[in-house]
Length: 117
Image (tube, rainbow, N blue to C red; front, side):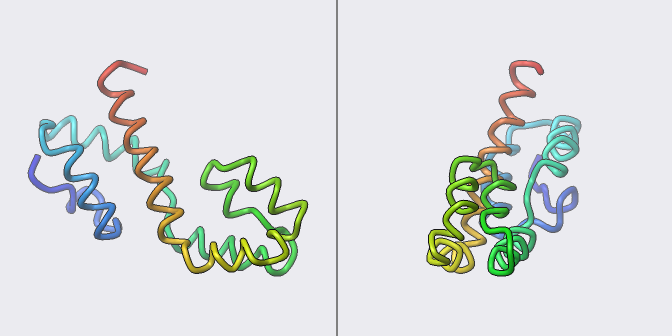
């Protein structure tokens, strides 16, 4: 499968590159199956950004919960985003948070497809 662009056009460039490396040896059907499983699991960088902004106005740490970092989410919640410093860092690094989460999810999907559910 040469390109995943037609199956998932909303991917960021670095995520697109990583996903293409994962699916390059898959058949067209396997690529479609991967896209169908992966698409609902991934997190948009804009979602991470918006939930980080919410942290300034009440519930710090939501962005960490949605990227699967429950421990940090609780820490941010009980410390007001580490006195807002952690929240500010997450505002700056929201794309990296989303990318790291999405890479882990993509790897999980590939393993699921390879070794069964």
